[in-house]
Every structure is written in structure tokens, then in C-alpha cells.
Amino acid sequence: MTEGRNFPPGFWWGAATSAYQIEGAPEADGRTRSIWDTFSHTPGRVRDGDTGDVAVEHYTRWEADLDLMAGLGLNAYRFSVSWPRVQPGGRGPANPAGLAFYDRLVDGLLERGISPLVTLYHWDLPQALEDAGGWAARDTAERFAEYARLTFDALGDRVATWTTLNEPWCSAFLGYASGDHAPGRREPAAAVRAVHHLLLGHGLAVRAMRAASPSHQLGITLNLFPVAAASAGAADTDAARRIDGLHNRLFLDPVLLGRYPADVLGDLAAVSDFAHVRDGDLDTISAPIDLLGVNYYHRHKVAAGEGSDNADVRGRTGLYPGSGDVRFVASGRPTTSMGWEVDASGLLELLVHLHVAYPPVALAVTENGAAFDDRPGDDGRVRDPDRVRFLDDHLRAAHRAIERGVDLRGYFAWSLLDNFEWAEGYSKRFGMVYVDYATQRRTLKDSARYYAETIARGGLNGRPA
Image (cartoon, rainbow, N blue to C red):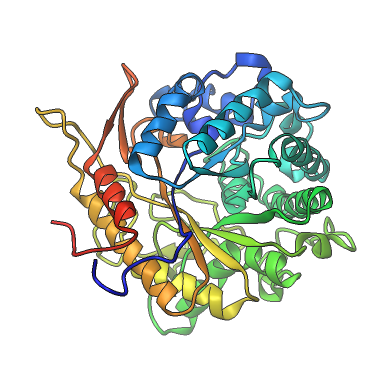
């Protein structure tokens, strides 16, 4: 082992998944519909008409999947709890049969020496709550806190680390502004309200869990992007400021600083007057957290450009209300099958920025990964050298961040398994484990073998071949 490339003792070597993407069994044991059940069953919403009805059958294959994790040497696993499985309809008492699945899952992880990290919300809002207004309605934040406490009371004796929301930017802007994700609404003002109510739900949930136990690690997971201007010109520089504000600071500042950034409020003035923000809300949202989860996939490079309707690198429009004249610019780097440019230096930049610009908080890379067009060879082996390189480059960036003083507690590869990739259906494969969807057979890709070897060493060695 080359000196200086070991990760700290106790570092989380993990992988991550989410409930709707892997579980299947949408009606088992009292589970009710979520917004993703409705969305995926609406013609034209998901590529090829795919749904999460079957996914990768983790609900019934969980023990074998835990054995896979143990075989890779993972010491941590980040998974999400299905809200409509635990609390059908989004209100009222917990569903014992639904909770029992997560009881078994947590116990199985602990038996294998794997620490469970729970994400309470990974986009599967009970449809009944969306029918009542969804995240655009304040009541949903209250309901989320109630659900959080029910789940915490059931699992908190064995789960030490909890995050409330996964990527609230996606929930708000993909769900309520562009309509590319569930619930599929194109209402910019509702999206701005959803931002606040998601963050308020986070704060209320932290308060509820903290009241039950002051010793647990509590946090939130944000998808963050370094944003650069395409030129030094004033218009491009302002475009970068606006996208950074809407994607990053609109979430970081309330949680870590207790305020919304004034410039972003100005950018959104034509969309919302923020009358939905009540006295005391920001105090609730900024309740101290122990961990900030960082999901990183790529950077943004932006320029001012009339008539672009802020189309992102995948051509989706309407994502950034109030900034419709911003266009996203390619930098010429290699891309994944999602069209995202690969740039591990952005992870280092992001982690160091969070360390320097915000009050001290422990960080974890809670998602990092890439989709490529993986196929088994004639010998059955799944060779994915691009993903191996991706993981190695990003782990090196994470290690450099630690060397610069960043309090980085862990790294969770996205994803453990190929799975349902939201509006892309089953067309994009992020997993380190290949899933034959016809048979549900799991096959380790070369990236899984690389990751297992890295974990066994406790760090990085020479560059992979």
C-alpha cells in the first residue's frame, strides 16, 4: 500500500440504493401507491413504459443482496424507506407489516457487520398526500415529520445515522417545475413552495427525532454541482451565479446558515413572493445537523443565451424558474450514457468549498457513480472499465479532500445494483452489480471487484489497468 492513500479508520465504504428503484412488490403487505407508481403508469412519462412494479425484486431477494454486500466487504449501506409502505396514505399509525421488512433488513445488515444508514425520503411521496397538494402544501411537511418519528421509533434502536431527504432539488424542480419526474407538474410557483416545504419537513423531522434521542447522527442529502461561467463576461458570470443559487445555495444556506440567499429571492421574485415562509420556519430548517450528505455526478458550465429556456445537458427545460435565459455548455470531456461529463475534480472542488464556506459539519459522499451501456461478454463477465476509472478517479478526489482537512466520513457508490432509473426506466445502468431483468440474476461487474479490492486495502493503490 502506497503511504498516504489510506482512508481514515472507521471510514464508511458503502453503496446506496433507493426503495422505489429496487424493491418492487408495490402492493405487498399493505403498501399503497406513491407518486412514482402513478407517474410511471401514466403513458409517455417513463421511457419504454417501464415501471417500478418489479424493479429488481429486492423486497423478496434482500437476503441474497445483503450477502452480495458482505462479499464486497461493504461496512455501510445507505437505503431509503418507502413512505407508503410504512405509513399507507401518508398519515395515521405505522403499518406493522411494512415496518417488518425494514426490521429484517436492518437486522440482516447488522448480522453481516454492515452499518445501516437510513434515508427517510427518496421521492416516493404517498399519492394521497399529492392529491391533497403534495410538497406545494405546507401540511405535507407536518406529515413527513410524523412519518419520520414513526420510522425512527421503530428502527432507531439499531440505526445510528439518519438523513431526512434525498435531493430535494430534484423533488421540487424536476417534480413541480419541469414535470420530468413525479408528480409531473409544471408549476414554477408550486416548485418554489415545494422547496420550502421540503426543507421545513427536514427541520421538523430533525426536531422530532432529536426529541426522541439526542445521540443519533441526523442530516440531509443534497445533490450539489460546482457551477462555472463559460466566459469571464458579466452576462455569463451572472448566469453562473443564478444557477449556483438555484441549485446549491437555495438549499445549503437555509440548512446551514438559517437564511435564504437574498440574490436568489430576487431572482425568483417574478415567480414567488415567498409569502409561504412563516416566522420561525428558518430556525426550524437550520436546526443543527451532524452530517451533510453530498451527491455528486458532474459539473455545470453555463452561459447567458436568449431563448434557451434553461435546457440542461439532457435537453430538459423549465428546471430553473426565473433563469430561462441560461444555457448549459459542454466542456468536451467524456460523458456517461446519461450525457453527463466526467470530471472528478469537481468533487474535490465541491468538498473543499463546503469545508471552507460553511460552518463545520461532517460530510459523506452519499452518491457518486456513472451509467454506462454494460453488457456481459461471451464468458459472462461484465467488463466496465469506464466505471472502474470513474470510481478510482472520484475516490482519489475524495482522498485529496481529506488531505486538505475536509471531515469526510464515507463514500457510497451509486449504485449497488442496476435498477429502475426513474424517467429513464431500465435503459440506464448505474450498478456495480449487473442485473438480468428477465431472470433477476445478479453478476458482479469488474467495477464491483475493483471496489471490493479497494475496500480490502483500505485505500488506493496504483491506477487500475
